[in-house]
Image (tube, one colour):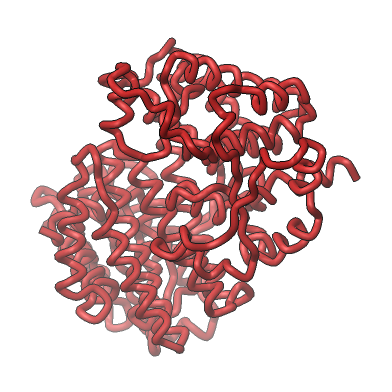
Length: 542
């Protein structure tokens, strides 16, 4: 089964920036030195990739799909034309003089097969043009599959246990409540291996295998239009990668940084496909599909979390020009606002810890919009949550869908169980920071909250290592109570500069990848570290 899935994935790769990069990685793993990859706008004279191994030179002509008569000799971009340019120009003028005497291998590479109708032409061309010093050969789809298994998914790095987990990971992709357990187990295995090896070559091999695995699962998720799952795949790899780099203190190592950037590209691609899928719904009134009001609101807040984290990522990370982004941070926020304007579910949290998504939204709006827009948004959320509670629909403390359904249809009175709230901690804090004293007074005077503890969570940089561990993260940090002091004293506590100073010592802040902390909050359901936005307010005042 894995062979068939891998074959389907390899057959889908585009020639530029996918198949050529995969081939380059496979060659490096097999001991080749890759000398050059094609650059956009530069004349290639038939050669898509140049490599060497031992005393021999390898020139690769890469095409996507089956070799048909048209692809063989149909136009100026045909395979035969590429071979002619290699013989007529490249071999004589583009190779260094030191390479002229070396044996040369001209290799046709495709993620398809050679069709029977054109095979005689191909075999005849090879026979006529091969010499003692020039060998012509091919790498077809079955050969690529074998190369991947030999060089990337070998028995050491992709053993039977991992293959079994991968089959299960892919098999359940159609399930509505998909769990990442099998995928996360595979990824954890890779990083356990990485912690044991020391040589650059062995690390490269593990990272290459991990990259191919991520490509494979993302491809299958995209085929099934499970874009949120694809984002989860990439987020988990980035969190695991950052945890590994933090543990090894290798943020300035070129190898790890190179692979981190490759994994970031997967994260961007998954988010862009997700937004492509959402765009048609963004202008339709209540157009997001759902079966009932609770499911609709749950979906809205899931979308809110993914897009807010991605918008924050785009707002806070230096993106190199060669990534060719489809959506900027501003585009991403605009899409989110359009969705919110047309879907009421974004304003009515189902669970108390949907305050995570609310704080992510407020934070990214603070980064991308003016303070007046943020003030209006805070006021709007407080108004809507007030209205919902007055209707008996409380943001519940337990993340239990069945209980949420009972409350939605007035089958349970939840009032007496509302003893503490993180959501109201977020709303109260933002009302204070945007200096909306009337809203602060309304919250503190609200009868519903008179017996409840309004709180917010925080942690110190000394606890960072445990943030990456699912079962440890909820045991970390401390809670501030926001309704036990006078508002002025509470605000003074919120803007404590010593906590902001400590925030700079988190590795994802120190090394300029703050989105990692936001991914952790969304994934592991822990409040966002409030220093993200508190430092923004402090900096605005200075």
